Amino acid sequence: MNSYCIQDFLDEIKLKRFENLHQFWRELDSKYPPQKVKELERAYAKLEDNDEAGFYDVIFAEYEIALLFSGLRIGLYQAVIEWILLSLSDREPERILDAGCGNGIIACYLAKRFTKAKITAIDISESAIEQAKALASTLNLTNIKFKVGDIKDFDTTDSFDTILTVAALDVTSPFLIKQMHNLCKHLSDDGIMLNFEKIANPQIQKFFAQAMNESALYLDLENSKWLKYNNAEGDEINIPAFASLKKGDQEPVSEQQIQSFMLAESNLLTNLDLSFKQEALAELLFNQLNPKELMRGYKAEFKDGSGTYWFEQWQSGPFSLLYEHTDQGYRNLRILPLYLASKFDVIFEEWLEQTSKYAEMEQLK
Ligand SMILES: C[S@@+](CC[C@H](N)C(=O)[O-])C[C@H]1O[C@@H](n2cnc3c(N)ncnc32)[C@H](O)[C@@H]1O
Image 1 (tube, rainbow, N blue to C red):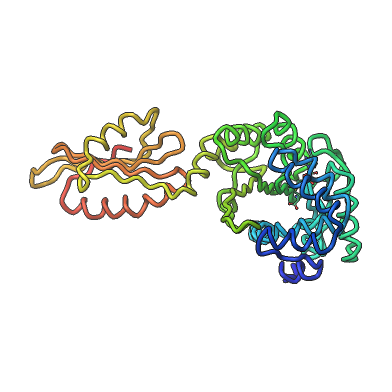
Image 2: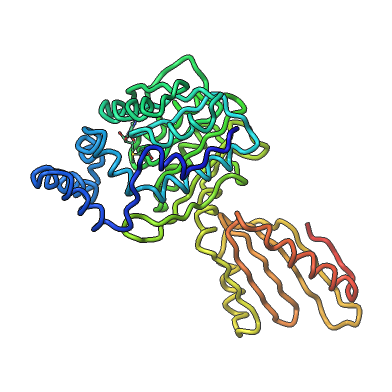
């Protein structure tokens, strides 16, 4: 792998960075006649009406305009490309598919970075592919090919060790399942699937999990990350980036895994304990969280006869629970997303080490 850095690439393709939207529209005003700017403003407004295809029809029609709009997404490109490189750091990709490549920025970066790899990039929009080809030719790339095609029924005899989608899947439509299936059909057995998609609400999360599960994908938790970047309006954006594999040791992607991953970003750690006089609430909440399964636990009988103490780790849906209770009425409940459950390990080990000095221990599980 060479060390071609992202910023060098952005400079090479002359992607202009805009500090804010105002600066962007000023640039357009200075370059295009008012009628053209109006047309672009109308196209931009379509994004708010969720008419992405309408927006891309207009902006992919001209190479320069497509690149100017890409200048609004520099934060995203940087975050996504860094994540891709990290996920591929112990692999040497040979065949990469970028599905829904748009004007080809990410695909062309990968072609420059992984010079020995063959890149295929597809998009449903003919004009997107036209601009992507133009970009590749300005970079003299010979290891990339482009095709017009729909993710759900694109076909080739090639298989890919890396498949990527960036804001390209129809996460809200029933086609998602077909898209995932078809991508997976083209993923080699030891391949990695990288999806960076907006799957913010619980309904979409459920659907996304179903699509991955039915495609027999396994979540690669080490490489799945939350990516942070600033958009052109200066807002901090946080989007989950999922890495998954065709083979795994656990169950294929579950709704619970996705939910747990989503919760991880909220830094959720609920701690209800005696110091806050919340024992009753801790007990009530613990009893309400059902179904749940005991993952490990100890009962400690204090040698001085002062009482009995239970220390237990449970799993309930996407949550991991650490529940302590005594026969004296002490209650302490801590809740973490399952994805972060290993944070309880230290607490558990410390308790075990300390308590076993003074108590007879009985392992419950
Ligand atoms: C938000 S753009 C992202 C482009 C590129 N992945 C990037 O991040 O720069 C979404 C792209 O997905 C393409 N697209 C949407 N639905 C598609 C489908 N079913 N098959 C192939 N491409 C699709 C659109 O034409 C558009 O170019």
